Length: 67
Image (tube, rainbow, N blue to C red; front, side, top):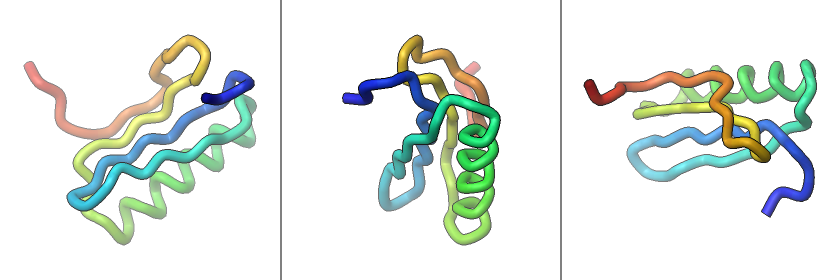
């Protein structure tokens, strides 16, 4: 459980789901985006999203969506 409101990066690959937490500020969002970009460079990613831990509000996402 996350004590404070944080940005959560969740990345799904063929072998695992990677989850990491970042401070909910401009720097934290930038770090989350940079980590997502770094993972995309070395792994096949099915989906990735950044959301706020408190409200579960999605900030950014990448991947296939069902129609």
